[in-house]
Image (tube, rainbow, N blue to C red):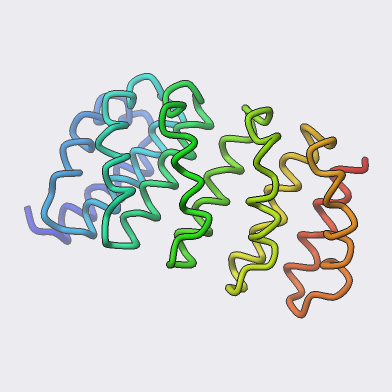
Length: 200
């Protein structure tokens, strides 16, 4: 099968959720494919499958983790995303690798830093307590050089503000300042949303 045919097949499988459970092994096998595009698609799909069937994806997690060290930023991005989705499904499946995700807060590639925030939001949705002593990492990301990262950073404060407002309260003044002064409209809106979630 050519790369484009295989990519298309994975696209069809993505939409076909009732076929996920029986195809986890197959999709995992594609992590060894020579094409970065196919590996990236497989990582993304395993993340989605893992949110639904975390225990069935468990055996693939070490292989997913191995892509966190890839020189291809797309593969790092997708691996971090996948761990976030699986961790949202069942935190214990990714727990051994959770602390290591924090290095991606300072990845040289903005899309990887963005994925780190997104993965953290996913995990924090069902397992918020683990973030209590790590809020300063997200505070730094509020001031990232990249607009998209800054647009996403307040969202982890919103997710945690809803579940553990005491974690976010120390940052409310800072979020308020950003919500009033940032050049980027989305950053302002998201910062205001985080305050609202924390205070309501």
